[in-house]
Length: 108
Ligand code: SF4
Image 1 (cartoon, protein in one colour):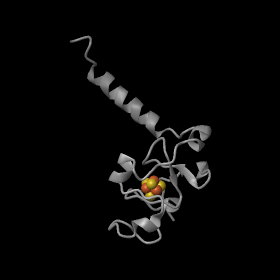
Image 2 (cartoon, rainbow, N blue to C red):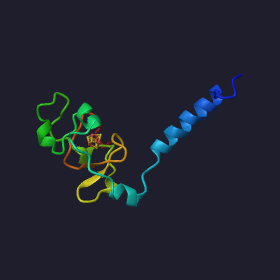
Image 3 (cartoon, protein in one colour):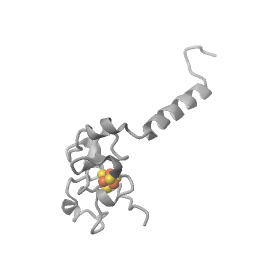
Image 4 (tube, rainbow, N blue to C red):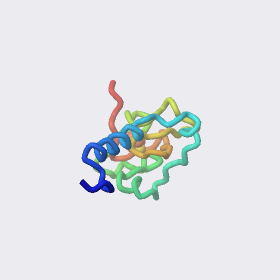
């Protein structure tokens, strides 16, 4: 066995640890200070994020009336000034009036 090469167990443990850290909620102070996601962001573009859901009307995936405020990924408990973290965009805050193709309606 090559000592510089991780074992499969070490590799999988590293992957799981990294994934677990990604699932942790952001500390409140950190979330409030998160920069706002812009429509120019590469990931935002790939998911068709718009800061105002009205601009998404032409997107085939858009359903009238949907916005970040009604999305299960919007962390409303950490909202500040109309923006809150979103699980789809780690480290950024999205507009509660926004929308993207990852929209998932909150359970009724
Ligand atoms: Fe908004 Fe939901 Fe898309 Fe996040 S995943 S940007 S909360 S619609």
